[in-house]
Image (cartoon, rainbow, N blue to C red; front, side, top):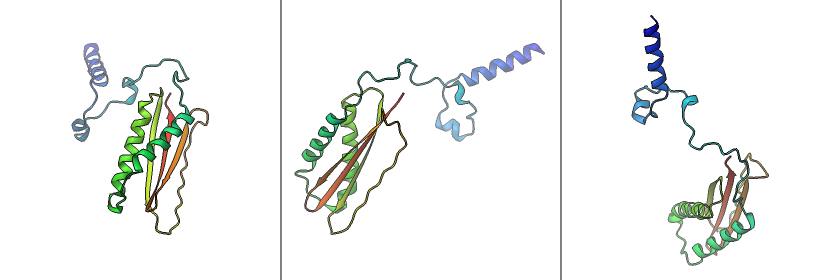
Length: 157
């Protein structure tokens, strides 16, 4: 009786502590691990502040310079505006990552629009820590189009 209980507890423990489930095993309904036993991706450092904190003024000027150099000679075509917004947001996020501010994650949002005598309103809301998180926004205007770029920096403890 005791050996059967011990065998079943060893089997359960080995299944819980086993390798992570793949998508094929999840699809087949074999995902029975709890998140309590998953090894964390980052180990605790017991340090709450970043060694290289985010510098808003530096990144604001870099973002403005980046948009002007990227868009000064750009010929606007309305059908390619979606691709332009995707490329700009990815490049902006990569530029922020290159600065290697420790423990920050970035979300870049770029809006590209025509200037055809219409109004444009853009609103964004977020819940964050005002001491560590930040948002930088920059605009670029040319006669046929405009670009509004925003990058949110979120501190990751």
